[in-house]
Amino acid sequence: MGSGQQVVVFGAYGHTGRFVVAELLDRGFAPVLSGRDAARLGALAAHHGGLAVRPATVDDPASLDRALVGAAAVVNCAGPFAVTGAPVIEAALRAGIPYVDVAAEIEANADTFARFTDRARAAGTVIVPAMAFYGGLGDLLATAALGDRTAADEVHVAYGLSSWHPTAGTLAAGRVSRERRGGRHLRFTGGRLEHHDDASAVVDWTFPAPLGTRPVIGEFTMADVVTVPSHLEVPEVRTYMAVDAARDLSAPDPAAPTAVDERGRSAQTFLVDVRVRSGGAERRAVAAGRDIYAVSAPLAVEAVHRVLTGRTRTTGVASAGAMFDAADFLHALSGHLSVDVRHDPADALGIMDPERD
Image 1 (cartoon, helix red, strand yellow):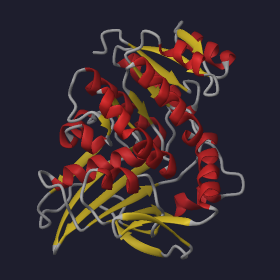
Image 2 (cartoon, one colour; image 1 turned 120 degrees about the vertical axis):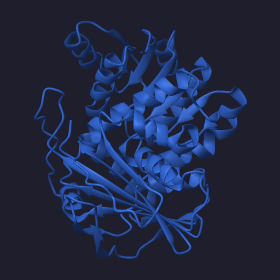
Image 3 (cartoon, one colour; image 1 turned 90 degrees about the horizontal axis):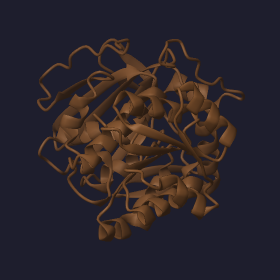
Image 4 (cartoon, rainbow, N blue to C red; image 1 turned 45 degrees about the vertical axis):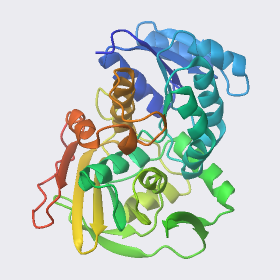
């Protein structure tokens, strides 16, 4: 399907990067492995029977330029994206190729929109930040739930994770974000991001079966507060996290994901419940699957495929819901996700099966 096109994966040997490399190979692309550690790149290349390796560092623009020579696109999987995002985007703009990343960092994603929207549009190129589980999936679900509408009063995104064994990259990104906020919290209200010191309340959220009612942390703010309002007129965007998963993340010494199948996925399951409210009406979209890091790979690679085949709605910097046909995109992921969208609030949502392959 990829017709052998070269796609550079920056941070290829990282936890999510490895899933992206495997997905690119499955889709017929030719991954080019890049990042700062030549030895780890070489080991990953050998694991796949020999792939192109091009070491590069974000503090050496010439090395990034060499890494992107002849490539059709670049996928940035190396966090913290507050450090790597801008240099890799700059290199993509110099090379004239599209850029996709899997950033979950709220500030880094906001920076991408603020710094590169005009330049990318003028260059006629495509930059898609947060094309991953956090930021991308919720945006696609909210956009699909709205259908042909582009405005709502509120969007609520609840994450029902069975557990959360964060990677070293996730923990590092979290530290960077906390430092940038001075330890304060973020929320999107009144049409803008604001810092606050309010304590986060625990509330009950009723997920579809088989999860049911679970305690979640209210205003556990994720990248959806950047992606959703970047193209939808929504003054209030709230995200929630299952209490057990949040505790895993904040543990003194959290355990990393452990592979339990031949694809390297963990046993973690998830259910993302998106509710879009306008007046007294509610629309809803739900996605269920397995391993939040593994599922980021088909999200990112499907985005690359659609960009390279001209199945986009705009140029410049845009989130998943703005760049692509959201409903069609989600349908294309049916091998990785169970998705149910209801425009009629009287309809009952079907049963999600997060154990499916």
